[in-house]
Length: 171
Image (tube, rainbow, N blue to C red; front, side, top):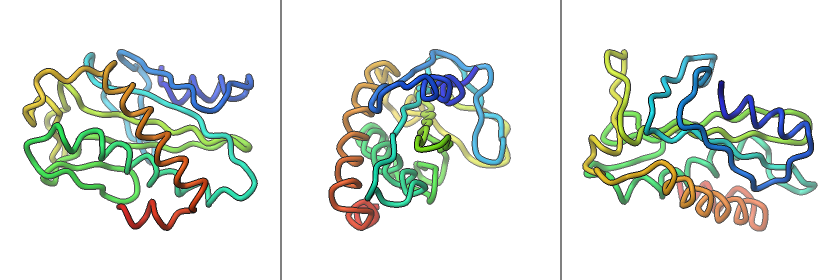
């Protein structure tokens, strides 16, 4: 179905922070406001969970933590200029290449990420692109997930230790 839905179940079962779940394909992927997120083979669909702690910045600011990580992941691979579109998209030259979806249950925030790696939807009312269309012919979703987990962990530790300001400043 969707990595966020599956991660919500794992969170309720006590899964630890830091685990990532990746799907090769999703049949129930979604974006903000219930929009359907197309999930063709070869793209990156993944989720992780963050267990909120006393003293953490506001939970919704995890969207910027994730956006900084996704931007750092895709920017070096793209021919065009990547930028974060607040609060949950990464664009390359104005075309969407990645989306982020936060969902909360109790003291846990599920952070879902979708990155167009090998393909992207066509015929939408907005421009979209993929890493392949940006020249990253060898990009692989599995390899990208490992790097994304590292980058997310980096920004999460800054968010926890120093607050939102350095995360926002980097954006």
